[in-house]
Length: 410
Image 1 (spheres, rainbow, N blue to C red):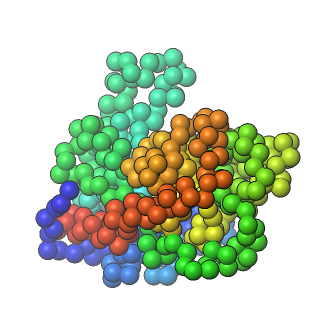
Image 2: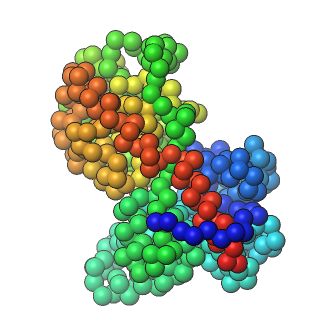
């Protein structure tokens, strides 16, 4: 969607995100890259986020990004997002002179606070959902089921309607996937307030390995030169499909391939797959073909060193790691869910399979372990399939245009 842009430039953008550096994840990564882009283009940026520990200052300047940590301390949790909402309202009202536009990255809790503060500040609010089901209210379906309420029935619709009315009053919606864009429009938000702005990546950083680079990276990372290297990148959480991937690997029993699992554990979380995953590997004696390497500060070298990237998520609003893999010219095996369907084309740049199905996942991975020609054919189309739509310079440029337009109407 194209928009006419007002002449006034946003003096300052307030990025409101539940968690930020040093928390690492898709939401946090997207917020940081947006902030860096704005700073590089001389737009003042503040990031308002939750206190997560005693060792971090309440105010910090990180490469030109002013980070402000507020609210009660505590590690990452769903409840923690909501506990900080009163502090958000107070801060937004008290510092209204410092910003023109509020951008809520993952607005489930922070969006409520931003809309309440807007009644006083009159600062426009942009919502960027990082998952489906927020505006429609479908993300509360599991709670309704546990309460014995039919999620599609009249009572459920009555419960969900106020949620849609509240969230639907935001000034603009930045949709990171076509799925979220369709949900936003179906919820009654006028198309003039809906922008397709997917999470994007630095295409100059994520690019195919040059001559000899793959082998050099493998040496640096301690990876075998002659084996097929498959890579999973993401937090070790059950909804990311880690346990199904390990079961698929057990079914395959490859002798000349290595599965590298990169990402942080979700220690203490009910969805943690780190400890169960390691126990599974030990129980089935897969230690020689599965390697856990923990979180990576920069995933690009590991992707470039790999032959195949696997993203077997149960659900995925977009799938940034998958875009990074394709941008590096590495083929992909992914679940046929959510935003992954926006850019993964089965048989063209990767293979798609049903989620939560280890046998189907194994069937998709297996042939690519032994057929270098098939991997090469998929790799040849990989980068071109994401280059146009997911380049952060273009996407963030359109987002800045949105901020400027909203500033002009204030």
